[in-house]
Length: 120
Image (cartoon, rainbow, N blue to C red):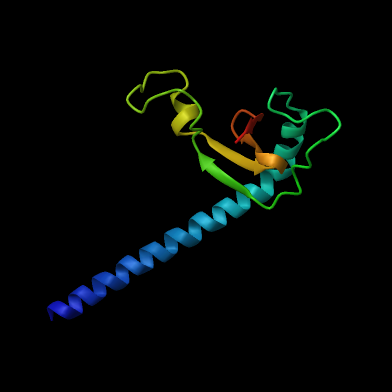
């Protein structure tokens, strides 16, 4: 009987894991499809010192590596600073990350409709 209960618990854990994986994958695909063109326009319009020279514009729609992340690690806020004005930007806001050529990537803030080009 104990083995049967453990088997059922294992099946429940696998079911929950599969449902969570499918949900997260579908949500990411939907967000990338909905915001990719807007993010590419914002990234192209963004003027940054990390951007390449004027003659070599990056086609942000060309790259296959577009993914959604929660929070931006480059914001200098620690997790215990709950009253900091940038805490949401560091830990809660969604960003669409687009990769370009030569290690250049773009972080598009879905909430603020802004883009920042960073060299990795």
